[in-house]
Image (cartoon, rainbow, N blue to C red; front, top):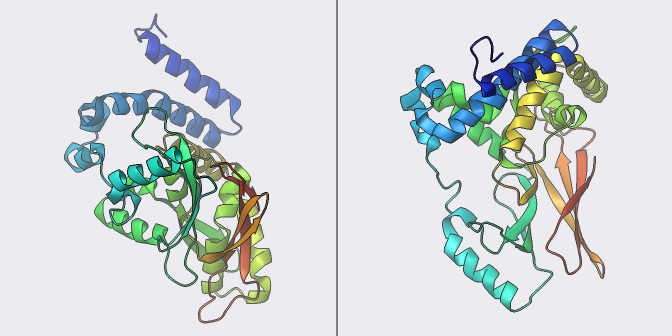
Length: 316
């Protein structure tokens, strides 16, 4: 590569892209693997280092439209983002007074979240002081939907920070059009596996199939068949999975242990001498005006041990 006129860095990326393509199975997967290696191994670092002045941003023809996305902004000013100083004061009090086992149980964010609150989120090495658990609403629309609508309307090119459009033909049923949720991985830093990526879409796939006329008795089996087909598709298993993993890799919210931004549901809390468990229960969506036969779609449990500002997730 260097002998052909490439820089050492360019030659390294070219070799890595070739290796990724060679390791993939099938021409479509090989092209996707090579392209992702170039995009995230060469283009992304350049944009991160140079921001709006990156030659890739300038060459996109959308430098003016992208300018605002290189500016730090507050996500939600009527929540923690808008009260950073007050949060620092509260966390400093808990920390200095040795007050442990503090867990906030909250809602009104239209999503599920589980994570920790740091003593100073601006510090180089922040320390966890308490645990924050947020439950979704049972009937209100999701945070994902709000942002998917807003970002898609402003800039379709940036929509992949929030969703990826998928059209899935289903034999005997029709075409299932989905906005596949990537917001979970933009928000939190847990990279998905192929199985978890597909499973995340189960509720939306089930709801979409119901809208296409699949009867309630066949919804769960048809949903599982559609998800199995997606996992077998190289475009899903390589391109979309790789994108979700890369978004998780650049997430700046390591204190969020889990986020489910496109959900309706509730949480059930149990406290014992050993700690606190919160079982988050995600609901299946209505099929038209009809309640689903299986109301609970999935459950995940947030576990907080006694005397520790930490949370682990387990379950489906």
